[in-house]
Length: 251
Image 1 (cartoon, rainbow, N blue to C red):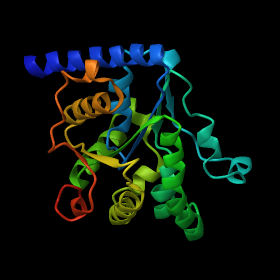
Image 2: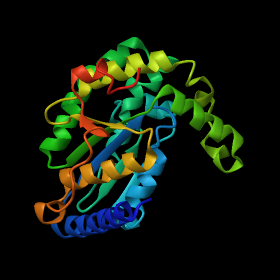
Image 3: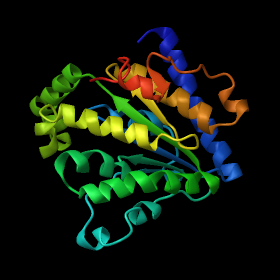
């Protein structure tokens, strides 16, 4: 890493700490949803984002598959229980959007349930924003070749054994199905009050830097974010329909 990037990354971490101090004082609440391809770097981005933040004010939520009792509830119910109180930042490492991605590709829910989700989620997210929660949705996108390389790294590195899942084994085989589900999800659920922001994540450090820059501009007041550079538009951009076919999202 060059000296300039090292200094910038340090400044970004300091700004995150200043943001959290401000949130604790003002009672600001924030939710960040991280979604993306398998191996797109969600865990690493979260580790970088939370490295110096206070544990008591920062919660990372990665829910397991629902049990029978939870499956009988309103779909959003188990997620609502994890929403932030005053001064808290909650990061969903995968979220309710499982219903628009992994459940679609693997048949874990019915087409009717998936259609209901796409109809309901804009209203659900609008309620969060209307209640004063700062809400950011990030989609991490990688190329097929990069995913293949990362999957092989997981299989061959014993320190990454806990990251290997049965779904990893068919991620490449289901690449096109995931692309179709992604396109539908982004198109149907990116709204003016809760837009999707896309991150091209083949280059991990570049993606993490852009994510932190974006979050500071979205969540922090001007006295903290004013000196932060805007993210590289080749790395991070707001979703628009044209991104599906113009090469910005991987096919």
